[in-house]
Length: 391
Ligand code: FDA
Image 1 (cartoon, protein in one colour):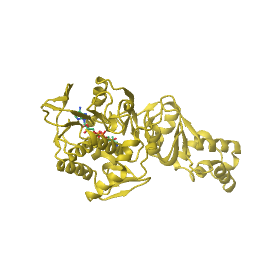
Image 2: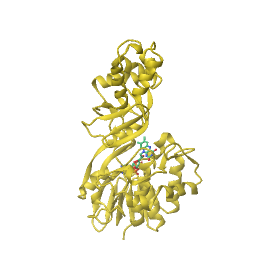
Image 3: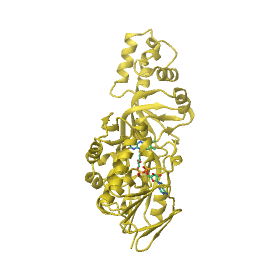
Image 4: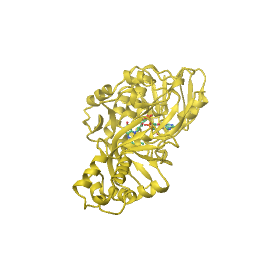
């Protein structure tokens, strides 16, 4: 006779959703968390307002070795289901941009909502429980520094490796490997890109400058703001592209989205021949960036004396600036981990390991990574719900 029907390890977004759903089904659920509070990443998300889902959530906005894997869970517990839960708890929210939904008040309301649902479903939440060992026999026995707990179902919901100072661990990946599940090599995603050499020499003095752009990496393209930093580039467009970036590949930037750079520069030359080129450029770009690019790519003359060829070369650069990152800012700054437990090892309906009945993996620990904008929480809710339905 087991003490519990389900042990969930990790009281984050996915773990709480899974626990509350399994509890609603009448399962006796133990939710173990090694930190001193549940949902800590929820609390810091979205600048403290939690971008909890996205109205435009579709499977195509997730990266995975198997791009079809997420379909089933995302279809069975959708963004509209989560919005319904948020409404039921009378949490005020708004759409910020691109379908991104944020709390009007605080991310604390989302954590309080999940805790209230867990409580109502009879979930036994225990904080400050560090998992020391997991044994597998007729069921699973999880040993912590405060005792051992047994159940026929075990759910790994310990998240990814990003922000290690908040208690992120690779425990789900370690346990998965121990049970013979394949792991897709994890890497930081939604992360600022770093540069060296001439590129960094240009970028560093521009730290803090932001502009609308299209960032392209491979076949992916994102139109959003980008930001220069002391180490390279950040901002939503770059974070999005970073998830698709592989070492050694370039990132290409369009600094004039939907604008014809060549026509604009030639028209500027015709209309104001006595102007400095950076003055004309500053009509198109932030002034500091205009100044740096003009100094680097144009002769020090009034624009009327600069040949069309030079202007057209600069215009081409502004539309397709090809840059080679030398790395990323790593897990310390990454919003998520890409890679994780290989979806080939899991049943897409239930999130249960095909080869280890009773073992489930959900949330960021799985090789499913969403775009920036509420997609990663939606994956946590959907995968958590799927496991909670059958654990
Ligand atoms: P999560 O990390 O939420 O939970 C894992 C839990 O397991 C944690 O409570 C952890 O302490 C616990 N744990 C780890 N190891 C353990 C162990 N050995 N024993 C017991 N417990 C253990 N996404 C989004 O959609 N919208 C947003 O606005 C943001 N904003 C954002 C900001 C920042 C700064 C970051 C770092 C991330 C985001 N994200 C986001 C991403 C989002 O936070 C993330 O994808 C989800 O929290 C993943 O949910 P999980 O439940 O899988 O992991």
